[in-house]
Length: 104
Image 1 (cartoon, rainbow, N blue to C red):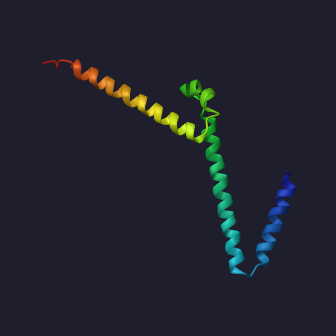
Image 2 (cartoon, one colour):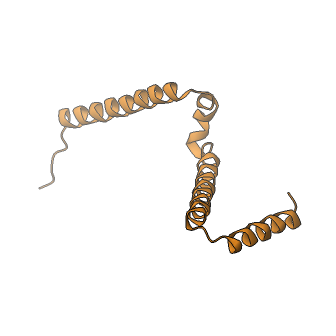
Image 3 (cartoon, one colour):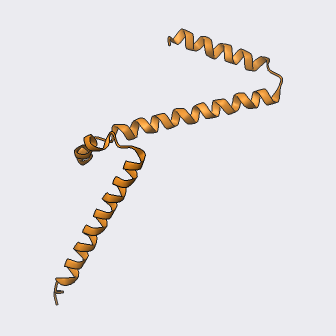
Protein backbone atom coordinates (compact mmCIF):
# COMPACT_ATOMS: atom_id res chain seq x y z
CA UNK A 1 0.00 0.00 0.00
CA UNK A 2 1.41 3.39 -0.95
CA UNK A 3 2.07 6.15 1.55
CA UNK A 4 -0.50 8.34 -0.18
CA UNK A 5 -3.17 5.64 0.21
CA UNK A 6 -2.27 5.13 3.87
CA UNK A 7 -2.41 8.86 4.56
CA UNK A 8 -5.76 8.98 2.76
CA UNK A 9 -7.07 6.20 4.97
CA UNK A 10 -5.77 7.96 8.08
CA UNK A 11 -7.30 11.27 7.04
CA UNK A 12 -10.61 9.59 6.24
CA UNK A 13 -10.59 7.84 9.62
CA UNK A 14 -9.74 11.09 11.42
CA UNK A 15 -12.55 12.92 9.63
CA UNK A 16 -15.01 10.16 10.53
CA UNK A 17 -13.95 10.29 14.19
CA UNK A 18 -14.18 14.09 14.26
CA UNK A 19 -17.78 13.93 13.04
CA UNK A 20 -18.89 11.31 15.55
CA UNK A 21 -20.96 12.33 18.55
CA UNK A 22 -21.85 8.81 19.74
CA UNK A 23 -19.61 7.90 22.70
CA UNK A 24 -20.21 4.18 22.18
CA UNK A 25 -18.98 4.41 18.59
CA UNK A 26 -15.94 6.39 19.74
CA UNK A 27 -15.27 3.75 22.41
CA UNK A 28 -15.45 1.09 19.70
CA UNK A 29 -12.92 3.05 17.64
CA UNK A 30 -10.66 3.39 20.67
CA UNK A 31 -10.98 -0.35 21.35
CA UNK A 32 -10.02 -1.32 17.83
CA UNK A 33 -7.03 1.06 17.90
CA UNK A 34 -5.87 -0.51 21.17
CA UNK A 35 -6.31 -4.01 19.73
CA UNK A 36 -4.45 -3.12 16.52
CA UNK A 37 -1.60 -1.61 18.57
CA UNK A 38 -1.43 -4.78 20.69
CA UNK A 39 -1.36 -6.95 17.55
CA UNK A 40 1.42 -4.80 16.08
CA UNK A 41 3.48 -5.16 19.27
CA UNK A 42 2.96 -8.92 19.30
CA UNK A 43 4.04 -9.17 15.65
CA UNK A 44 7.22 -7.27 16.50
CA UNK A 45 7.92 -9.59 19.44
CA UNK A 46 7.24 -12.64 17.27
CA UNK A 47 9.65 -11.31 14.66
CA UNK A 48 12.38 -10.91 17.27
CA UNK A 49 11.78 -14.40 18.62
CA UNK A 50 11.79 -15.90 15.12
CA UNK A 51 15.02 -14.11 14.31
CA UNK A 52 16.64 -15.74 17.35
CA UNK A 53 15.50 -19.28 16.57
CA UNK A 54 18.61 -20.08 14.58
CA UNK A 55 21.25 -18.15 16.51
CA UNK A 56 24.27 -19.84 18.03
CA UNK A 57 23.78 -23.32 19.45
CA UNK A 58 20.05 -23.12 18.72
CA UNK A 59 20.82 -23.53 15.02
CA UNK A 60 21.68 -27.20 15.61
CA UNK A 61 18.06 -27.85 16.58
CA UNK A 62 16.20 -25.41 14.32
CA UNK A 63 15.96 -27.73 11.30
CA UNK A 64 14.53 -30.57 13.39
CA UNK A 65 12.04 -28.44 15.32
CA UNK A 66 10.70 -25.93 12.78
CA UNK A 67 7.82 -28.16 11.63
CA UNK A 68 6.73 -29.60 14.98
CA UNK A 69 3.10 -29.27 16.01
CA UNK A 70 2.14 -27.61 19.29
CA UNK A 71 1.72 -31.01 20.96
CA UNK A 72 5.08 -32.20 19.64
CA UNK A 73 6.74 -29.00 20.89
CA UNK A 74 5.31 -29.62 24.36
CA UNK A 75 6.54 -33.22 24.35
CA UNK A 76 9.97 -32.23 23.02
CA UNK A 77 10.30 -29.50 25.68
CA UNK A 78 9.48 -32.04 28.40
CA UNK A 79 12.07 -34.41 26.96
CA UNK A 80 14.74 -31.69 26.99
CA UNK A 81 13.86 -30.60 30.53
CA UNK A 82 13.99 -34.21 31.71
CA UNK A 83 17.40 -34.70 30.12
CA UNK A 84 18.74 -31.50 31.71
CA UNK A 85 17.41 -32.60 35.10
CA UNK A 86 18.95 -36.09 34.65
CA UNK A 87 22.38 -34.63 33.78
CA UNK A 88 22.24 -32.21 36.71
CA UNK A 89 21.36 -35.02 39.12
CA UNK A 90 24.11 -37.22 37.66
CA UNK A 91 26.66 -34.43 38.10
CA UNK A 92 25.48 -33.93 41.69
CA UNK A 93 25.79 -37.68 42.45
CA UNK A 94 29.33 -37.68 41.00
CA UNK A 95 30.24 -34.60 43.04
CA UNK A 96 28.84 -36.22 46.19
CA UNK A 97 30.76 -39.45 45.48
CA UNK A 98 34.04 -37.59 44.92
CA UNK A 99 34.12 -34.75 47.45
CA UNK A 100 36.98 -32.31 47.02
CA UNK A 101 39.15 -32.20 50.10
CA UNK A 102 39.29 -28.76 51.63
CA UNK A 103 42.67 -27.09 51.92
CA UNK A 104 43.73 -26.51 55.49
